[in-house]
View 1: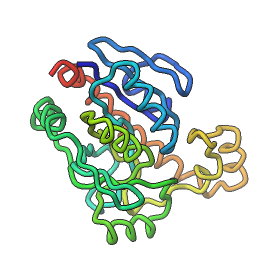
View 2: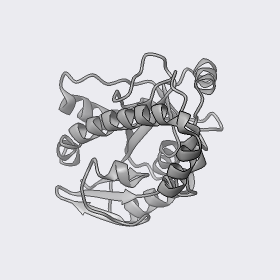
View 3: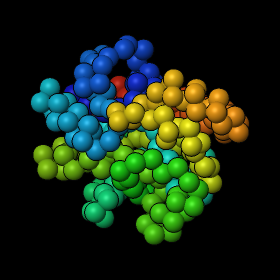
Length: 233
């Protein structure tokens, strides 16, 4: 059964394969695995999901990074949520069979379940994360999984999200990140460097964020080795 994987950013794609593709393109991996580089945000995720389904995918994974809302989560932690909650407070259950297959493949590796919340943008401030956690009891937040889940629900396609934490709930993302973010959700390096030159106080938090992302991507690479078992189950 063909497995479709949706990633938002090129950095997340590299946890699966070193090939370079453009946003909106699809990559075929061994063992009946298809990967789409969607770009960030709900609309891009929806388009990528429909593309994978039209290409023959019969089960879908929303793959990549997320921001922590629960205080106990740290950078590099793995989440496989049971529920995806949309911005309109619709709750969509992820596929129980797919989650069990992943859990079996993980063995004794630790992961967290719970609710993954949809956001229309990056939640950058610790106080915003705390407010969302208190309001929704969701453990983490991302911008794509809810849109993917909605398409899969309408078409009765098994779906799960596999996400690793980049920023903990008490971490304030550097202003330089949101300042240099493009409409596609990637970072404009020139704008980032220029902003950092003008605001050198941002450097320590940018270094810390880099370490966090390295930990998150390392975990994704470890989990990617198990996807063949899921694709062939």
